[in-house]
Image 1: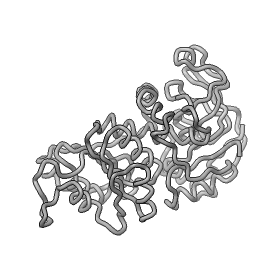
Image 2: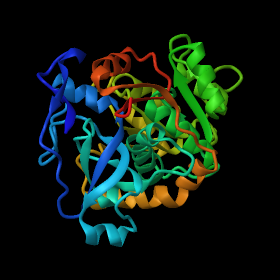
Image 3: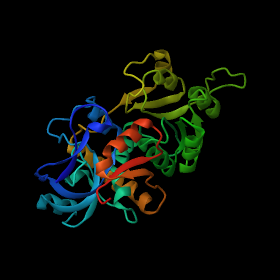
Image 4: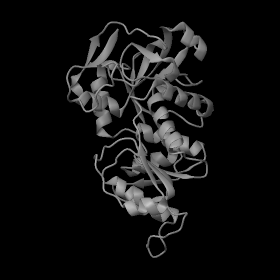
Length: 342
């Protein structure tokens, strides 16, 4: 099979087309003939040597695919309601940048009706991540509010749409007026340009956490209920300040640094929760539970057009280095995908 492999740790040009032995499905797995592979930030980190592959996972990058089932564990497929020839998308721990990919049955979902393979390949990594962190870990409820950092990233465009569709008030940050407009078009109630505005002050103002004189209010209504953070570092202190009572901060990446200082007194007085998670090394059963929730609660929204995949650009596998260069530029709005049919 053809693959895109990391020839050495480094810049995007270390990505190379290669030939590998065909992937083989093991117990509880399906074999997918891949039509498209999603490109994600963890792939970039793996390429640079900053994200070691979990034990037992393929060293081939790629955490999400869409394609056709061409083999696998017959009993596991029967139990899950899949069969040879079904079109599916899947979350994998590695191996997605390849023509064939083995995936746990529990991490597979049918391609939503009306979506292309490129669109379907953009779903698993971000949808699993957002559901796990925003709705399971942070327990965002209808009627609550959420601040999404990086609203035009792959995670961001998913989180905005999912939170809005499920009844939340959505605030998002982005790095330009164009990107802020994109956040609003996706359904965000407010978008904050973090390069020209202090997001914490804006959240306090917008949610009534500041009095008319600009003084921090003790009103219980001030602040947001949940923050989804991909930055960490210096952002954490500001995020603690703009959480409402019983607020939850979920950290899913540390692009701004590993260390943070914040006002622990606010955590105590407002009974705040600061948590975080990574998805890639979690057990198959954990991911299968997320898949079940997505199929029941989110897939109908995709098929009804209430949530849409946002594809910024697709590349042929031969141009995977260009896909990674675009990812690192942060110029994209939405997802980047490798199209094996291109």
